Image (cartoon, rainbow, N blue to C red; front, side):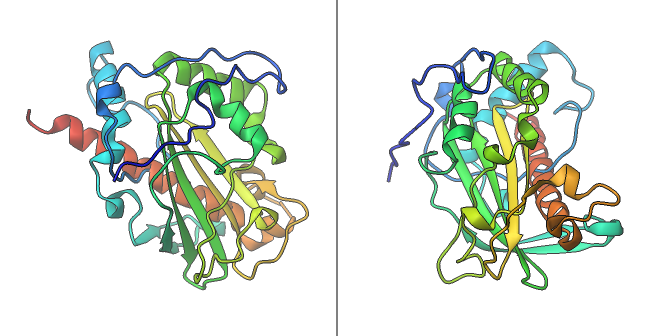
Length: 270
């Protein structure tokens, strides 16, 4: 059954309240957009295809990434269990268990208004989300993969703006969690967001993010970006609880898996 995207990014003008302008671009690989479920990734840098840095190879990988969400099973995108070796504070190992997968669909109501406007120039083709809990069921973390409508130039422009204007660290630009009834994340709402990370990829039309909080539903007065919460000597409640590590660790592994899926799909014989 086909879902209406309900795309809040669609035809809006470039976002202005944050300052600067971002040009919008549309994806040249629209033929890749078909109903289905997607991927899993994590944070690694460098080329998609080892040994192939040619412009043609990069374009092919970008187009492949744009269409992967409807070809890869959800359990590869968001595995039932994710191992985070060395992902915790002090290099401790982490294990996360998936407790909910959001319905496959568009981006309506998935982001706070200001973040929605900041991402608007890239558009929304599809949003995939899953929520995990740690081994002690003390923490919950939502991981998201936003597949945009932007081309490579559009993603580079969006990433440059987030970096240059410090948008990655703004508490009014946190992504929203996915709270599923009957799970440890049932009380994981906007007020419970404690730490987050967001990455605009430039070699794929994808934005990867994660947001973490406590499973007991406690509200957080001062959420902190994962990079700050993970810094040596950080003493905030999210830092002390390791919630920055929860968000960053899961986002990294989801992005890493995404890249592996792109390489595998590109290498498949035609």
